[in-house]
Length: 457
Ligand SMILES: [Zn+2]
Image (cartoon, rainbow, N blue to C red; front, side):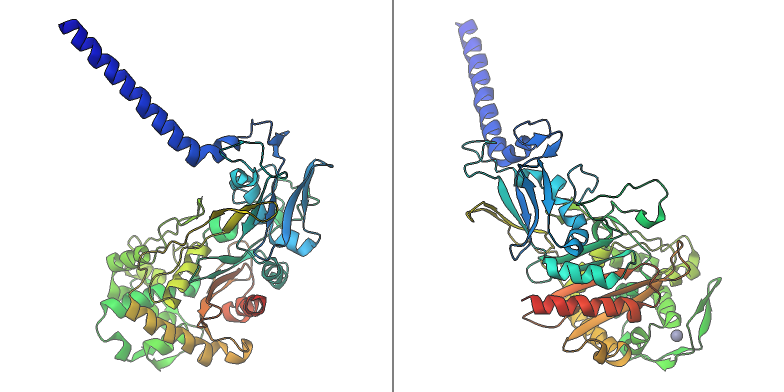
């Protein structure tokens, strides 16, 4: 009897394991079936390791890439500018570009479904609609004018990335032979918006300003003084000229290094670290599963002088352009913003939608009240320094930056900010490597791209 009881228990336990295992398998089959089927050894979907089905389109339905069964290869847009501008979003079939949809979202292109598996219900695989606008990407690529760099624009209310351009790039319809050490194509497979970090220059003063507003009582009402140079710790901090007496708002507008170096030392290294983290810079963002590069800082090892340079955005600061764009979006949107995404939806050929992507929001990257104050200051930057006339018709709030570029005699030019425009809630980042002055060069690129974005809808 005892034996029977113990055997019953064992059998019951085994049955339980079987039921639980079947349950887990069924659940994973529904959730991960498309990823399993996209495994590159699946000969239904791959020819010589190249995915052989699906289309990639932009938000307007412009086809960016389409698998041509007759010639057994991927065909791209007929517009060479669009091909180059969207290379890092579309990718190429051999998988060299890690952020490319052909590699990253192969599972979305296969037409896989839980009923007929890898044999699609409708012929031709699935259509993957990206959030990008190909025309805006084209405008951005042209505006970079041969420079290396990146341009990102996203809707801070919905998260849709409408522009993601990285240069250098190449034409996927006729890929060049790229040799090691070829300067023209240095880092060509890297998506600079998502996967790289750069010295942020004065754009980082936005984070220092946030920390100052929240940790230094009455900082907005103080008057600072700039002689054009000052010594902090063992470091000589310089400005291009003596800015004289100025408020913090005026110091941000003229990007005064002396004032922002002083502010960083008053804030202190641990609070500076805290605010860089709170701004979301030191975290990786997940853009439909694509992880962005984390920004990094060292506010401690260089003493007071090093801390001053870090607060100015030089020193050892390294910032991911996408994270900076999202911070601008959070300032625009009252402290938190929709997380950026690159996939709009998927559909069967013929238009039946097979998925929707839901919006997710960041946590508060900045307090609402501070965000409102900073937005006013960034609007003041445009009105009193960059010049509204350079951005006709745009209710623009922005911060420029100029940072040393080790690979070039000219500096890297930055420009980040947003539109205060309910109909066009766009935040952006522009980096022109070796471009020179931030607001003049990167600001001009930003204007071209934002004008195209506003016109696009
Ligand atoms: Zn100054």
